[in-house]
Image (cartoon, rainbow, N blue to C red; front, side, top):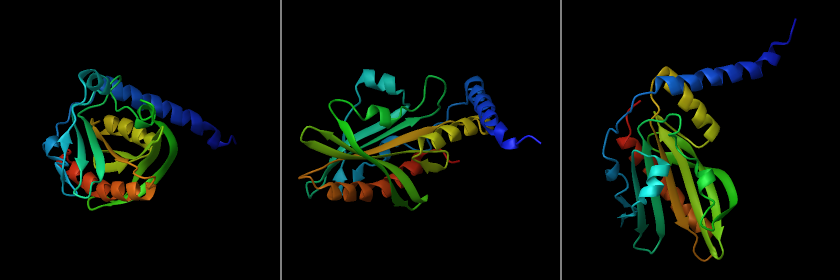
Length: 214
């Protein structure tokens, strides 16, 4: 009797093709936000956010439906920025661009990558991507994750699979990319991590507040 395990690669390949074809052909309908994205992260850790508009050309390339990008300075002088890009649908030629490909740029180079965990009141323990970037004598810590359709995820292979699955089964592909950037001051990477971690869980909850319910 032939070993059935030998069929697995073919089964996964065909399944992926079918799901991808469904995503392209069905073209899941757009899903509007349940709340105003501009109401997210207005004030974080007591600091009021200052909007930083995305240039028109960059916005076209990113393809988001709505977004926020804000800089913050706390009363203690701690600086950080938050970006949330929302896509009401994703389809062939219009999907979230992986920050893993976009982060290296403008002189910034990744020197460290890992997965960290934060506590969310809504989702419990959540996994986030962590990058450490350098640009000459400057350094920054970046946390980012994907959020939508009732879950938070950092693994981009899982994100892609769930996108195809939900498009086929639910007709829904909406999703948000959430990112926190904290400059490293005086080589104190630990302080930057603590700051990013203190923001991550509450930010995920605030984003969930305006996302469409599952």
